[in-house]
Image (cartoon, rainbow over all chains, first blue to last red; front, side, top):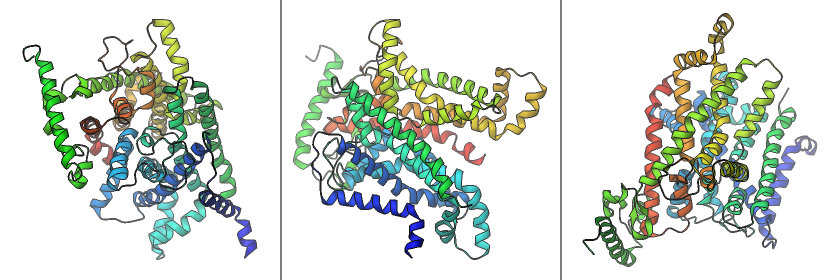
Length: 253
Length: 290
């Protein structure tokens, strides 16, 4: 059994990441006035947003590919929701998130509301990307699977990822890159504290918002803004290259 | 004081109205109507912006929220002016580059440029704003004088931000229907103008969809405009004067707005939603049936 698990090294990596994130919350490190809290807060918020948004986006891509059958009015509702959300500017999504998640649901300025607002933002991007990359395979093999009695959900979550892990990871990384860049949506939902976050209800300052404040409101903050944006650009370039490289290890055959 | 000027009287009436309701609201503000109090149109104290503030107030060009003048005109004009200047520039640049890409799709340079454009799209708007503050503002300032923060600088920065999206949209839609054009490309001597005409006439869906999408992106773009436009609450008389767009108003004032000011910002956002939904849904039927 250990030999089987050892071959799937990516599961180990995922386990390590999860354990380290959870461990960080049990033993809060005392970082003050550094960018460590900002970087950790950014990573947790954006990764959490992508992971939260991936599930509904994947299901809706299945709907659009014709695998999951919904009643007609629900199908047109999904189509129109993707279309409308795609065109909404991010500050409007920030206001919707502020009113809905911070005030009405009572989460306050926290990472959770930022994650849910970024979910609103990422959902159309992920749906379009999943639809584009997975549609040929899903349409063809989904109808074939239906004729064997394999239901749509089993197909989408057991059979399809076995062949398309690389593409799914590609799309998730694209979603991560999108959420890293968006300032206006998190400006209003996430607060502006630079302290190291201690729970998911803590407010953090995301890296792009920090760059914005340094460039606009802190006198003499421009050099730091430039170096932080260089860091962000290098990280985004890295995110571009990683899926292409990982596809070689993740795709089957 | 009533005979001074009607505008002062109107705004002072609005101030008195506002202050009186502020006292009433602070007494009974907690239960301002449950969920409806968090909708964009109602105040925390349960007052509607469009009921409390007369239409003459919020349809004017006077945005001074500290005295109770909530005129949406300035912000809307700023945003529409920006769209008017940026939309044609970015569409033309995007179309031109995409035509060059399609013409040279067999060369080795093509995947390189497409990758560069994809990286360019994924750059966050803050970073493009920071770069533009460093490069574009001094350029405009040295060439034209004045402060560099102007409609011109915002147009240049926003065009730089939006052009790769335009390019790749046009490029992909051209490539999808390439088989229709290949015979024409090889047999006729087509100029860029005639090919544009052919493309628009044969693929109106793609062109109109692209224009819609780019309009929505430019209208809603906050960060680049905030950093480059100077944020002065005026309708600019010149392309070299600062202006203030709708999204920049919301972004800047949300952090310190209270009471009716906050509600006015939510109402501004509602107006933006209405405009964007109108533009998006006008072509919905055509785009989804194609």
